[in-house]
Structures are given as structure tokens and as C-alpha cells.
Length: 426
Picture 1: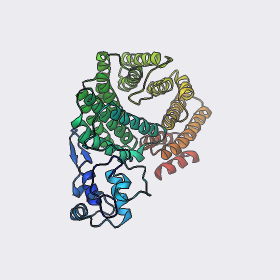
Picture 2 (picture 1 turned 120 degrees about the vertical axis):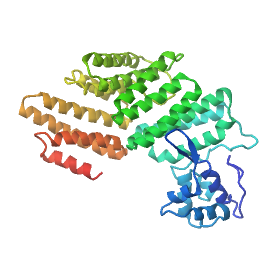
Picture 3 (picture 1 turned 60 degrees about the horizontal axis):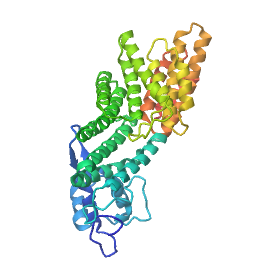
Picture 4 (picture 1 turned 90 degrees about the vertical axis):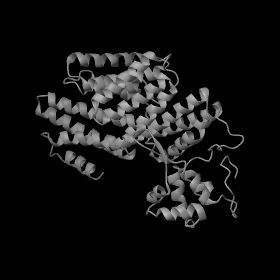
């Protein structure tokens, strides 16, 4: 078999024996546990993943005797769940976005080696994946990413050494961060933290402070969104410490960590002094964001003046009197690229939160009503976007807005009732 695939035996139709292919990819598909351990899928796992489920014995017959594979739908399902390139199962004309690309390098063949060119190809794939995540949701790539992680962990890392081993570990750590980010959006906290822990473990193996910082940063974000603020603060403070130890850290990493630290410290603040410290960190992030050139974004953080402004706006909503919120929102709107759908969605949610704060502070009944009405319209439009990009995380944030609106003097307005109905249908 050519095209860079492992050397499967060809069947009478010229395609590899499908059972051999299924077994090869099953044994390289990993389950990840909370402690960071990996374990290959069993035949029972494959059977359970099928819809409808099939027995372990049926999977065994598939692998050993090529039985039960006459259905193209069954082959499509196996291609999807095990990230098998469709061509290997005779599905040349049926291509799935979730399956592993056909450019997968051959494994353990005489010419296979781990070098800078191979590792750069993994980096390029990550850039494409994160582009899809930032503009939409990236969920269609989950099977592909699982396949690349399996390939890296089982086939690349054992052959890598020296600087190439360090780079391969950093790359796998970033793949787990991608899965963490997607799990956060799906509101799957357990999966998010599992990938966060694995990512941090891999980053620590590199010995590079910046890789550790990126892993701590994303785990802190996952913990913050689960309202585990104390633990999030520990992680982000750890990231700040590693930044001090890092040699020439990326400005993007420095800016994003200080922005995230400012937000988390604001959420954790119990005194005005602690709140001042939080906004001091945000001020440091602002000075970085205002620079003309921030360098390469190797960790796919997309930190810029727009994202800094959004973080400041989120921190301001924690304060009793969020002076400066309007300016922060305007800057976030102005400097956030239009294609970053999720960030504009979050911006809308923060704008609605600001309107609710404004309603609580105004004494005019007419002014209150206007704020509530505008907040409802913004939240309703945001819900449509959250559904479009499959963001359960932001759907739940909008539900929190709805609960506040429902409890207000405006709670029985048709616009609020409509928002509640739309939420109930998701």
C-alpha cells in the first residue's frame, strides 16, 4: 500500500485487508484517564462505540476474518471512530471531515524518521485546526486530533530524541490543549480537565517554561469556567512564576497570561487592595497589547488589543461600579477581527451583563426598562450565534442572563419570555 500508509497486506480487490487496518488503528487509538495515563481501545470499546452497539466477538471477527464489513455504513462508522483514512477501507469516494487526512506519514518503515520537517507538518496541522476553532467551533476535527495524538504518542515519541523529542512533546501537549478548548465549549468539564492534566504533564517533560506556561494558562481558564476560582488562581500564579523563569518568552504568551491573571484575580478579590492588584496585571497586559509587533503565536492564543480589551471588560463586570466598561467594550469591538466569531459572542454577553449592572444602578424606571430591553435583545441575538458555533459554555452564560432578567421587573416582558423559550429548546 502506497501513499505513506503502514505496509498492510493487499486483498484481492487491491485494497488492504480491512480487518488488519481496523486492528492497527484500534490499537493506536488512546483513551486518556484523569491521571494522564493512556490506554489503547479494546475490541469491546469499538463495539460500544458502534450505533447500534455490537459485541466484542463481532469486532474480533471483523479484525481476524474480515466478517461483518459488507456494509459501507459500517465502514464509514469505523473510519470516523478510529480516524482511519477512508481510502484504507475502500471508501475513496466517501470523505469525512473528521477522519485523519491522507497525508499521515508511514510508520516504522525503512525511510521513516523524526526530523524537523515532520514536526513542522504537525505544527501546520495545528494552525489549521485552531483556525477552525477560533472562527467556528472545531468539533468536526475531534476524531482527526485523536488520531494525531495516538500517532505522536505511539509512533513518533519512541523514535524521537534530543531537540526533536522536546518539540514532539510540546506538539502533543498543544493537541491536548486543542481538545481541552473544544471540551470547554461543549461544557464537558471532566474531559477538559483530563486533557488539561495530560497537556501539563507533557509540557513538564519538555523542561521548557513557556510550554508549561501555556498548559497552566489553559487549565486555569477551564477551572475558571467551572467556578473553581481558587484553583484557577493557583494555576495562573504558577504560570506567572514560570514566565519569570523563561528565557525570552513570547510577548503573546506574556500578554495573555497577565490578562488572564488580571481577570482571575479580579474574580478572586475579596478586598479593594486585591482588586487593585488584579487591574495592575491588566494594565501590564495592555502595555504589551499596544505594541506594534507581538511576534509568532506558536501557542495559538491570538492575544491582541481586542482580546485584552475583552478581558478587561469581563473583569470590570465584577466591580460594583464598572467605570470604563463602555470604553473597554468599544475597544474590544474595534480591535477584534470580524472572523473571530466566539470572541464577538463573548463580547455581546459581557455587553448584556453591563446593561444589567446599569439597570441596577439607575433610579429611573424608564431607564431600567430600557436597559433590560436592550440586554434581552443582545442576549437573544447572542444565543443564535452560540447555537451556530455549538458553544454550550456561552449558552449557559446566556441562561444566567435570562435568570436575572426573569427575576427583574421586566421578567414577564414577551422578549424575556421568548428568550426563555429559545433556551429551553436547546
